[in-house]
Every structure is written in structure tokens, then in C-alpha cells.
Amino acid sequence: MSFLRFLMVLSLVVWVGGVIFLAFVEAPTAFSPVLLPTRHMAGSIVGHSLDLLHSMAIVSGIIYLFASMLYNRLATGTARPLAARHLLIVLMLMLTMISQFAISPKMHALRAEVGIIDNVPLDNPQRREFDRLHVWSEKFEEAALLLGLVTIYVTAQALR
Image 1 (cartoon, rainbow, N blue to C red):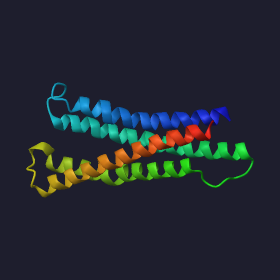
Image 2 (spheres, rainbow, N blue to C red; image 1 turned 90 degrees about the horizontal axis):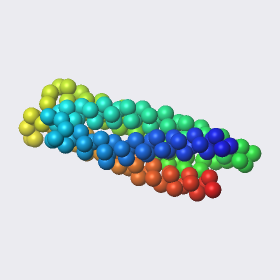
Image 3 (cartoon, rainbow, N blue to C red; image 1 turned 30 degrees about the vertical axis):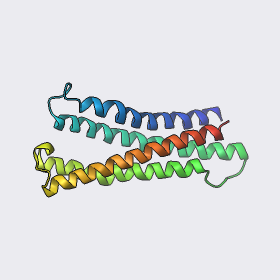
Image 4 (cartoon, rainbow, N blue to C red; image 1 turned 180 degrees about the horizontal axis):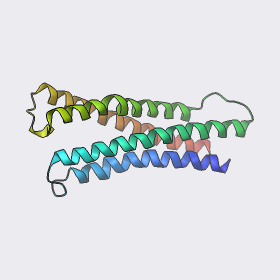
């Protein structure tokens, strides 16, 4: 049972910690004009990191669900209905997968098509679409982070 609790906590730490690191450390650092010569390079680094983070998040979410459901079954001796923390993880997984498999590929394709996005005029339809997708990407990450923080709290309460 303690190993299952460990897996649950570890998967949350990896996922939520990764989002926090990307949002509050890597992205601001990469986009700092002191570090990289162009915003295009910074966007390439952060975009690639986000793709890797999404992959880690999907694996973490699956591990969490498996460990948590098994923990519930062993703790009660019966198959209980899904707990609130399971639904939170499913929502986080949905947001992450939409971002990874719907939003990010479109953004990557637009960047590849137009080249350096900052050189494209703001009124260009491709630039407007890229900016719109970027806003959605940020909203999905923010929502996943907030849900993750709630999941950490709910999990801590359930494992007391």
C-alpha cells in the first residue's frame, strides 16, 4: 500500500512540478533577451519542452489512475466508484491530450510554414491563428495546473 501511495505522490510531483517549472522558470528564462538571441529560438526550446512535458504528464496520469484505483480496491476490499481525485486526473489528462495532439501540432505546423513567427505581421491570418492557439495552449496549461494543485490537496486528504 505504501508503494501505491508513493506512485500516486510521485506522479503528481512529476506532472505538477513540471508544469510549474516550465511556466515559472524555463519559459521566462528562455524568452529573456539576455539568454537567447531570438524569440524564435526561445519558442522552439519551450515548444519542444512542452511536448516532452505532455508525454511525461500522460504517463504520470496513467500511473496515478492505476495506483490510486488499486489503492482504493486494496484499502476497501471492493471496487469503489471513482473518487473525486480520479475525475480531476481524467480532466487533466483530457486537457493535456487536447493540447498535445490538437493545439501543439497546429502551432508547430504554422511555425514551420511561416518561418520566424515574430517576422509575420500581426494582421496576417496565419499569425492571428498562431496567437489564438497560443492563448488556448496557455489556458489549457493553467487549467491543468490548477486542477493539479486541487488534486494534490484531495490526494493528501485521502491518504491521511
